Image (cartoon, rainbow, N blue to C red; front, top):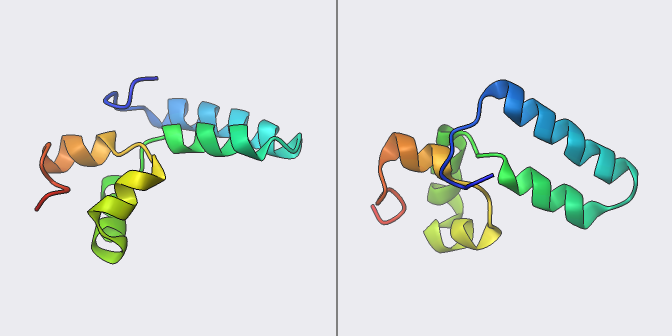
Length: 78
């Protein structure tokens, strides 16, 4: 799923459940990859940015598309 797409709660739940199945199978790499594809809630992204810094947040590979949609394309630079 593209990083710029906003997901519904149902889509996030479906993806999360698939990730949990990989975790149960011991495939932690796939679990982590899938979990990172679920957009981080904008308020949590803002907290993480303020706590860890923009560069560290970007390096995690977490999907920040919903934060970008809410705060604008330059929110990590402000």
